[in-house]
Image (cartoon, rainbow, N blue to C red; front, side, top):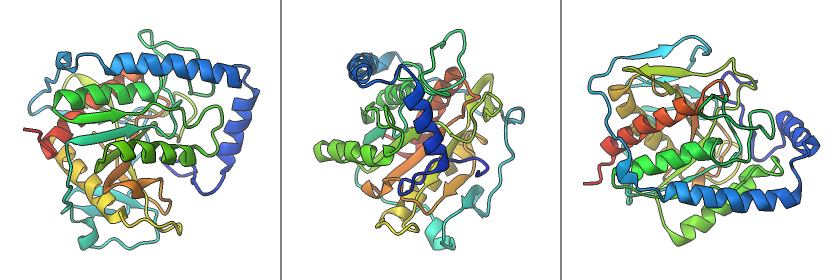
Length: 317
């Protein structure tokens, strides 16, 4: 099991997938009729949350804040390459040259952002404020408590900065986990057929753990935020992917600004052979937000800082 990333290969069914499919099949809540009811109800909730007046979002962030990576419940970060302070763990078949790593990406459209979730039901350690009933091991179909809620918060923050955001909360991993990437590809294709965008974010929770013992956290000023991590795919697995170097440059560009403003907000970038549907846009990426040991509060805090970083990289006037 890889140190800090265990997403399944979308072209192969992994051992983890088989276990999860068995768990989901055995859970009495996971029946087709309930899927349809939950999806309608939760989509309505998500739309209501997303349509809140984003002008009420508090965009205040501390200036020159002291940051510190919290060692407790964390895993030592390892990497193979470094570019101007950006650490990269290269698990692909490619040798990374300075030309590949230079973040000289030019996007035609930086205003429109698409956010979706290949693993929509991923969730976090419950707290008093965000307590919920799990429908799997750190998984829930309630969009108010899953990684989809994190996407809603990021949507509201980015909208407040002037971005135009489409947030899709379709269940791509429920009731079946296997085939999640096939389903999310159709979702993204449908969204992009209606609204073109160069920035496409697949928002996840790190799947390395299955308990509250791993929760990568950074303190920024007086706040505690879940650490983030880019996962970038390539064509190393054999699937056509002409955008992978642009995707990597996009991640480096964002992380470079994050390291300047909030060192430790991001863990090292992971580069892999699998494509992860990132061929759909020049600024496509997976962003892992925390892990099972993080709380939803910490993840929401991360979105405040991520949106600020993105607004600095791509100011909207």
